[in-house]
Image (cartoon, rainbow, N blue to C red; front, top):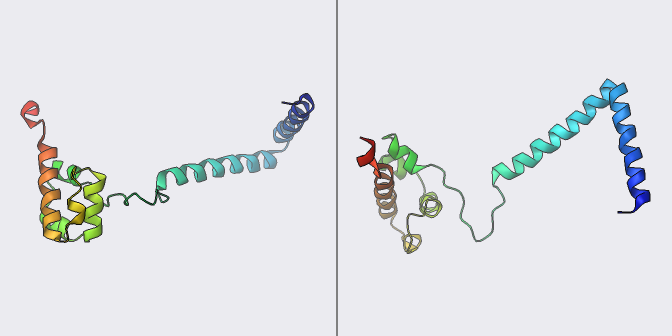
Length: 129
């Protein structure tokens, strides 16, 4: 880095710090900038709206968590669309052969999700009881 640039930057930031120490309104405005900037950055990371074009959307429900709490039923899954069911299958890796993505029968997808979720939720129960 150029010594002159480094010196000028130190002077500029020194002035900003001095002004923030003297002027409470200026300090509050600076805090708002940093707080808003951090929250906007966190929101972009957490929303996950921007996914690669070759990726499916995130699953709308967690069927394994529902199965662990005995809240998963065929009726819950039946209320979802075929696309949402396929998103669940893809998100939770329930079809290693990728054949379920070609299925058109909604009942078949529901049965796959239901069986896989129950099996995964009960895995290890022999050691828990």
